[in-house]
Length: 244
Ligand code: NAP
Image (cartoon, rainbow, N blue to C red; front, top):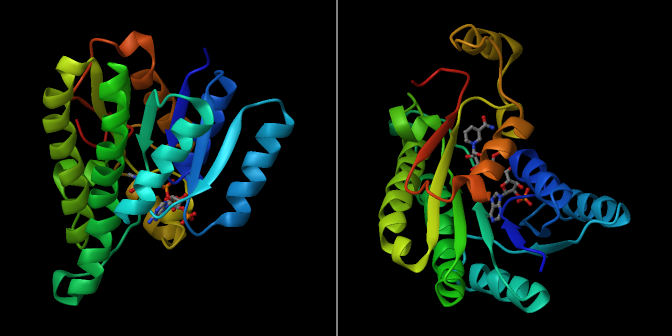
């Protein structure tokens, strides 16, 4: 039977590249989006027209009920939830003195609570199946902290803590939980940076360039594959050597 992968935040960027890769590898793909209806529908339609099994589902992962419905709809449609990639996320830059409580709550709600909501709902299904793989998308800033990104760095550090704790909790149920921590990746998340800012940053990356969404997708795919059956609770950096 075909396996099913849910990819949150798959309307663009890393999530879209991951959805495409899983579809090409033969998975049923649930392509979650929140606000980008058009790009999610376009991607789902073009994959479906090429014979791949893809279902777009709108859900704000920060909302517990919507996250639960996302998992339920996937289960109803395909009969199992084998992989969940918690990729949905938003960035926020600003000095701590300019980060108000609303900004902080929004980042934590989407990046950390959204991951918790989807992990919890998917874990309920996976525990019954006695199998499953959870991959949470953190960031290298969750490992080492970024200046002027306190909320974002805290949310992504939280994702790493959640991943490690959940890996221990779910291992007896045959479920692995891992994280990828991307460096600076060419997606719309970095579209606010000037060419000069990007050039300055790239100069500090040992491999001398930004990463691509497809390169992050490959690391996620590996963690979801049978080749990673004995790997759990780990954080795989995809950062060109910036954090070693
Ligand atoms: P992106 O191109 O901006 O895409 C973000 C995705 O997250 C979109 O599909 C968006 O969906 C979705 N999303 C945002 N809020 C959501 C919500 N409340 N519910 C459901 N989906 C939501 O960003 P990206 O670079 O691909 O980032 C993907 C992940 O990688 C994020 O977790 C990010 O923190 C992490 N990351 C990125 C980089 C980087 O340099 N790009 C580095 C490290 C980590 P809609 O547009 O439909 O709302």
